[in-house]
Image (cartoon, rainbow, N blue to C red; front, side):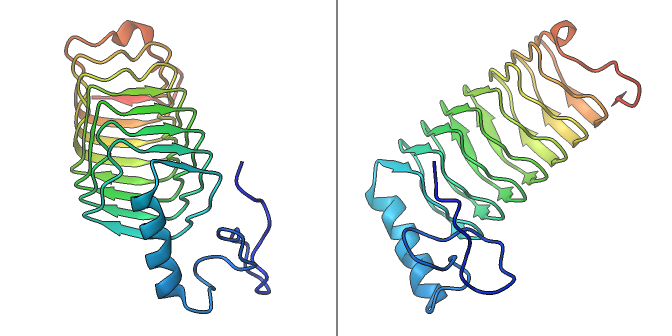
Length: 200
């Protein structure tokens, strides 16, 4: 697991990056540190136990990479490619994903809580035991996926195609769902019905 050591800057609660005593934001040269972090990801097939908190990625490819136990809290992903990416026990809380593509991705035991997803395509992927609680998900194609035991608790979802998905044991409790297509998905095995859930 990534280091839980905090940045040495007073009142900063961010985690240190890659053996430094500072987070990426407080690196002596934050722009160079960010470039080096992105370069590291580009060059490696397996990225494990590192903190990339607050990093911005645009037109960036994670395709075919394995991300394990990494911390991407508060990151921004614009038009990024996650085709055939393996993600396990990673944290993307409070992040933003816009125009990104996930095809044949395998995402397990990861958290995307309180994040923003807009105009993304997630298809033919496995998204198991993952957390989208409190997220805002708009105008996304999320068809042909397996969302087994994932949670969308207290999320806002609008204009989403969830057709042909496995949503067994997935939770949409207390969520606001507007213009959602669940055609050919097993909605009877998902959880919607605790008081406070809205569908329609």
